[in-house]
Picture 1 (cartoon, rainbow, N blue to C red):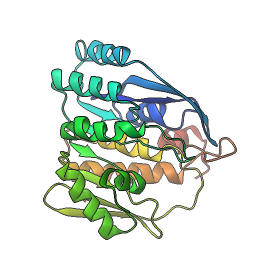
Picture 2: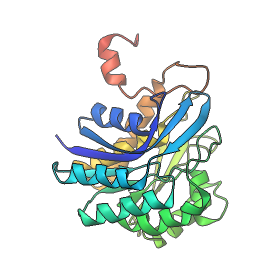
Picture 3: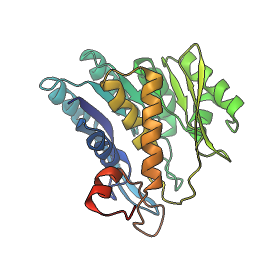
Picture 4: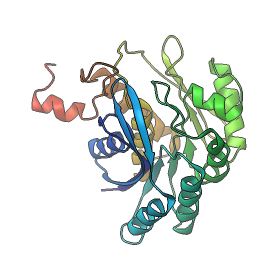
Length: 268
């Protein structure tokens, strides 16, 4: 079994953030660990509050894990301020962490900013050079590149720019485009396009967190990047197909759909 660490914020309704990451790790057969950077008050309708942890406890969480447990991959999600970003970068470098997936979480679906604007440049400067792959959605790719990203061609342009900022590879997620869900994978040399059918559902809470966490699991297993991303996309597509009707807003995707099918939760 591979050991995978998530460094991210907590989601009180369990659909995104740390909770989604740990569910994904477990669903895909990895042992999950967490370093919590912030606590959010949120439900399926939005985020009502955020409390950042101090950088020192983030640093201590990272050290305590690396000093005791072999960590095969790291996923980085919500990192909300400069001090936390610098602490993460410094300690991961110190411990020689490898197979790092950076999901540049900047704003929630409900519009709540989860990354301080002044920290955006620091995230790029500190964490992108550590990343095996960065996984922005269209909005995040636009913020990072200071340009509009609203087509596959612009996704390709954004991917090249993000690699130039230090990332070894980029997955620009095209889930917000019209038509089929197309993701652009760029490894610094070649482009690859991963397409899946669009699933009509409002219940997509935690998709970005889950996708990046699945990539981390497959990288931990030693799979090449493109294979890891393909397998992660297949998993996230299945999880969206089996999304849960929980709450009165955008419900969570079904991380454990295979387990739930065996348990009789689904009729299929």
